[in-house]
Figure (cartoon, rainbow, N blue to C red):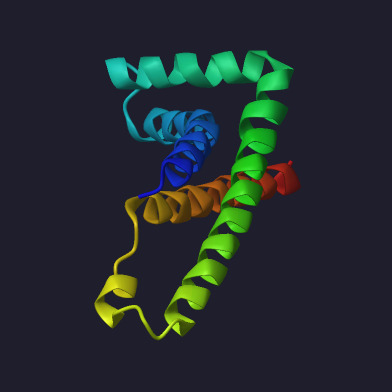
Length: 127
């Protein structure tokens, strides 16, 4: 794993985590009886996000959109470089078959950003 890939993957995870926290809190609030500690904590998180207008735009839209853009471009660069490596006949086929962990983390972060933006967009269209 390249250090650069690790840094990009970590940044992407940090960009997606606030939105995931909110979405998980929404799910936990709706699934638990309101008297449980989990539901009360989830309600506190949802209330904190809803009380501040900037959190909705920044933490639920801007940061996941940035994670999506970063992930898309980095994965495109990685796939292009892997195609160039696979075209090199001197490399063994077994060395190109393994996928670095940073690439998997970036793919997961990009997918989570897509899910978050889709949920937020659907919610905005319904209101």
